[in-house]
Picture 1: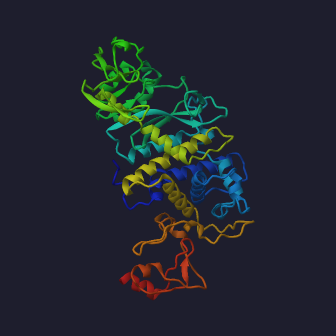
Picture 2 (picture 1 turned 135 degrees about the vertical axis):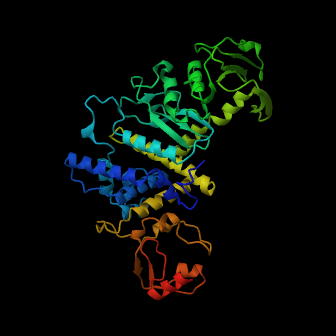
Picture 3 (picture 1 turned 180 degrees about the vertical axis):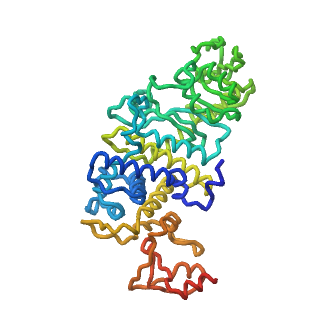
Length: 485
């Protein structure tokens, strides 16, 4: 599944995330943000990559550590204070970065621009390329919509009373059953240009999101919003297998047995003019399916009754395959919503930026679990937050935080479980990130050197790391002896 040459099992959670949000992407955001501030003659100290890492780390932290208002994170009140936040960045600096954050140059926007997503298009393209390159596609995939909450003014905002998020931006996504999103796009309205206009709105969404799958016999499932016989015939010509639910009033579908003539577990089928299998199956009510590769094979499904008992129901194989492989986008939405950063903004595209950031975190979570086994999503976000905050500690920045006492620096290590003797007490997300910021400091008390202790050598130095707060030997003879052993 994974592209092993790009991601290895030794990578920490932060390194896995940074494979998606890589240095090229970070440098582009830093450049565009500084350019925007200069073009608008704003009093803004130029943004550095380390500060953007800290900004993103705080954004992750704000998702799982909820407070009533964003400014409360910098409060000095004991019931609101989160010491690691003011220690990382001042409040004014955080809001300054948020105000000037930019992804594309406004001055180069074409006068006849038709892309309503111009401001976020560079990020969409870069992330889609990363998602596709860092994970080999699963044989079974699904395409579905996802909503991003937004109640402000925007020409691309959608309203759907049947969804849990009724107002917001609509995303078309291609994902697998693990919740990994390979490709996505934002719906801009019916006026947007499509590749194959004869397929209609739903058909063109599928056509655009499956171009990378041509000729490889991948299997794609989607619901009745997208389905038409012409679409499945087009996918079959491109060697893409597909199955989906379909509305019985679609053009080109043959007539099947009436609902009243079927009992639960029975089905009727026909073959369309294009050679597609069209099935009506009776469960509690009639459901219609269309497939360009299934036959009439049957299987048995288990249904739960109102009293909790189980009922075995006969069904065509297309029903079982569709039910098994269609829930990938639901899982991705579930993960994204658990610790999502629900923040209002005056800029319409900020919601999309943070939604794409959350999608990247979900993809990083799926990738990390593939490498290291399943962990709670909260733990992944904590690891990434700590790692990004550590990257944000730039040793070359001498600017002091005003109006706040310095933290002891132990916040990064709070709630870290006790280590085994063979392991280090500090997570790799702290220990291996931003190596240039880890410098020795000398204190009055002494404690065991962690490296010497792991090798069963007795040593109690006065020196410790400024970031990790772990005592380490810092003298020439001791270091030389450790290297030789």
